[in-house]
Length: 467
Image (cartoon, rainbow, N blue to C red):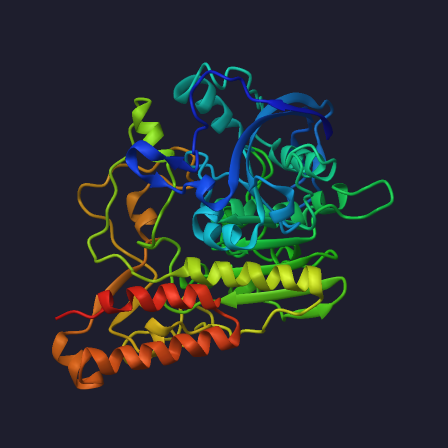
């Protein structure tokens, strides 16, 4: 991998794809109101295509590095004096270059003065940006090969360390974070040697921590993607599927959906200097939920003439808030890196022996794990799967499956209690709210929720009660 330069992106008068804010639609986040700026840069270098010529063997670069040019989207405090000195680096998701981590944790980033960097790392996205979405703005983008994404990410890390991405803001500790497909990208980066290759000549690692969210190491090609097209999928018992520390702080944050397949790669939490690790499994959450979104990508894609496949599930969507737990997990990860304060340990969800299925109580609620207020004082059973409606169309071609029913299996749904049952359990809404508030306070005290996010959860709690 060779990092060469960073330059401003071509100025055409348009705004970045996936920009933080579309003010004419009141969509997204107004960064200026938080004292932040957004910048889009062109990152250039040379990247190898990594592959695994022997099934189950080591990652090997193909003979020649290929030049690349990709975009880096930066959101940072406008003034260095207000910056925290902490940076979250996110590979943008294969679906429309979406910033899934930013979407879930931006309130925490903005409150604390942290910087965020999103990297277009996948070849098909550079092509889509250049040919379909904004050909003039992105005419210079060129990621010629799938399999270069790991070197591209490493180049972004080196550009950060060189002080070339954040203007007057110092990057400080760097956490590489991803969700779903990009969570799996982070797992491969850590486990297949890219973490060690991304070091100074003196051997200091340039990535200090990893958040691997809603990605199961046991989930076949989805949990540990092949390095390049045509590579064999790692065997289910390959040791690389189980995360090890490599000197970085690592948090794997899973919903019920991923926890069903994570059993074969479970490991104990670690507190050793070279293996600081936590697994946090959140009961009553799912891979996909109806939680708030500030992403502008779909709007801009459709404005450019794109069309998304129709998709819906038959059941009511889950109102769980996995995003609130992601914010607390990142805050704990940062404290561990900067202040040497270990993250809290979590009970594990209970997996049925020999099955990809969680143990559940008489209501159908999963047992074990971190237990959010909507699980402690439930008005419904939160389930990690849905079933596809008859109007669904095939998923986008980048997905590892082409069946809408498989996609629906990632969608969290709810089975609400009848009103008579909620009244039998709690009496009145006021009584239930008191218990919900107590459960929220317990989660804040235990470190699973941040105080500000507990307040947000309570603010919307009355909407959960029906009748």
